Image (cartoon, rainbow, N blue to C red; front, top):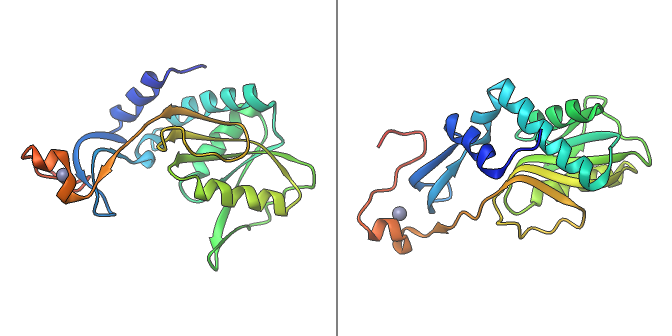
Length: 193
Ligand code: ZN
């Protein structure tokens, strides 16, 4: 079930989850690439394959977990598919009053080993926050993973970590954007140029 980075990115491109061009992001910055993981996960067969490939990498790094956990919403389907492949339960933490917590009766028992997964890691902030949820419940995070690592591999989470594809996606202030300087017009992702 091993997949190369190119195979992974081809799946993303096929569902328009990875666009290449000249985009104006929500932050106002410009970029040559735009990533929307929900579009790849809308296809259950692709979600299953990607989850199995990520599970294989994580189990190879850290052994089998007792559960897989993700931050809602973006990570839920990833946790579900990685958990399916690993044969363990998949849960999610969600934000309540500003902090991530376990709700809906989800439990992590003391000493249980967890993978923390997400769709995309940029700074690793929500993975770190989910790791704290596991630790607060007495669980042990043995590895962290994401479908895509957008930090160029630079994020350090303090545990073994895997991604199916590592991207270095530079963003530019509009006045410094080389694409604008070359005369092209940035478009909002999803809109038609
Ligand atoms: Zn631009």
